[in-house]
Length: 130
Image (cartoon, rainbow, N blue to C red; front, side, top):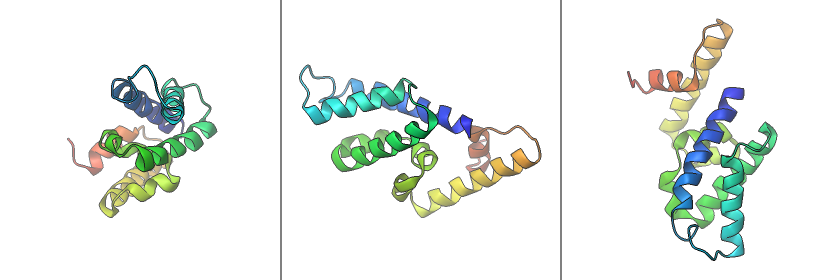
């Protein structure tokens, strides 16, 4: 869904803004791996990738965060793990997976009925946020 790509790009933008002011990424001198990480995150945040590359590079970046920057994991919005799919979904709990599956069901039902419904609206319904 094109809407998902926009949501993912916005989540990466938020994550980039968070990381850019944290050590070691705000330091003048970065290791090669730190520089590569922040450059890849910036590329994802600047919406400069097509959808296929967004998902592939996004999944790689999330796995890099989990493996190498555990201090950043609390800053990861859980939505990004679901929306990127692949191995990223392994980091979601069973209850979360159930909720996201229900969100997808609502989105498909709305689409089949030609009823407008955004990811955020479906999420609010499932999580009873309103």
